[in-house]
Amino acid sequence: MYVAMSNKTTMAAMSPSKRRLQKELTSLIREPPQGIHVDEDRTSQNLTQWIIHMEGAKGTLYEGEQFQLQFRFSSKYPFDSPEVTFIGGNIPVHPHIYSNGHICLSILSDDWSPALSVQSICLSIVSMLSSCKEKKRPPDNLFYVKTCNKNPKKTIWWYHDKNISLKLLLAAAIKAAEIGGSEIISVHNQVKFEIRSKGKTKEGVNDPVTEADYRSHCAMYHSLLEAFPSITVISEETSKDCDKVTLSNIRNNIDNLNDYDIKDEIINTNDITVWIDPLDATKEFTENLLQYVTTMVCVAVKGEPIIGVIYKPFETKQNSSLFWTWANHAVSRNLQVLHKVENERSPTLIVSQSHAGQIHNVTKIAFGKDVKIISAAGAEVVSGNVTAYVHMTAIKKWDICAGTAILTALGGTLTQLFDQQLISFGPTDSKVLTWGLLATMSNHAYYLDKFSDI
Image 1 (tube, rainbow, N blue to C red):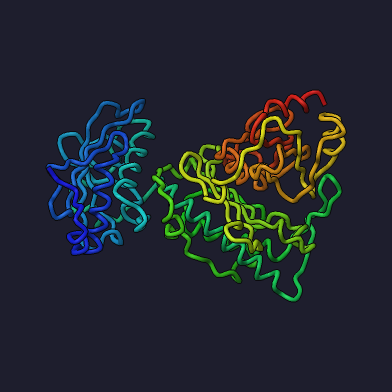
Image 2 (image 1 turned 90 degrees about the vertical axis):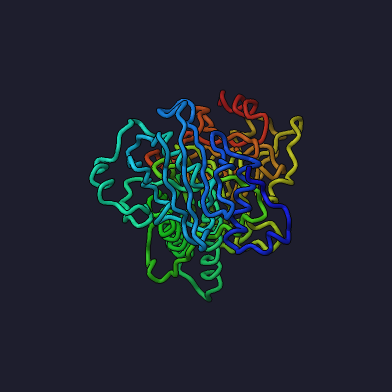
């Protein structure tokens, strides 16, 4: 049986590639994902060839089936993707798996990144199998098997759908928010910049737009699409003069997550919608109330916000500029230390500074004249300083998606105010929320009840 090395001297003598493989192998042996385990007896002592056993997931077409994957690694791994094929007597019958075991999967070639791992590949293959609706071979199976090279990496693949590493997407979302913030700072530092108007809100407040909005949009929107061409990105702004903005490579910025122990998850690109707000609080930006200015990125899977990133480009206090969560996976450390709101404390409500509407009067009717109301440019329910955030008029979903992801990841609840339904953030959902908004960290039903009779 293969024994994971623990001698530091032996590890130090290894090449960087083999050290990486040794680390991955040890991790897979100690904590194998469900339905996946390494065949230690058949794993080469030189670490360049692995055999991994895989079980079909319950509730799928492949439930109860057993498969074998062969991994071959070059000396350039992880900068070079491994050669991965199904072997043995049971090759999965799947539209993207050929009868010779070759797999049409983008992360094995075009979309490979050194940040990915053997575990990422296995999870992606499990996801691909689990999402299959009909067992059948690729339409060109017979021709391909007769004419292909033995090494599937020498095939030029054409991908009809793709899977995405959410860990990579989280890292990219963080970087996108930061580069958007850099564009905002750059515009602010100009002697003068133009302020235009999109019109007025329903409350009669001017809805301004500036060069900072457009430059941040260009940097965030196009960098995300450059890194993940098949995802759907919805932005508050439109592309204007984007040729003047230098795009950043944000795909391989996994280093900003090195201090976090995060297990990856692979999701089909068709299930992902990314919502971005390139400059939240534009009105406050034009009034130099910079403490309210943020950039936001939200990743929704099947309409549910699971990753939220909020970046405050003008914040100078240490560890107070970047906040993010990934539901059931990880939370930025500055959010881990927030205190929880006491259930019995008197209501302290926060309302939007720019879109307050009639909320002040309605709130006093609901809770009495002693209720404390704070006007601000953004909700800070997760901070513990307030008990609820209330919004009664129309609001755009890019304004709330990241906040929803963060709030719910920390145990809070966000629903529509008047019909009390959860909010969906899918690609075809309405971009405007018209039924009000209520966000709480606790006692959500209590607050809903207070507003139900108004």
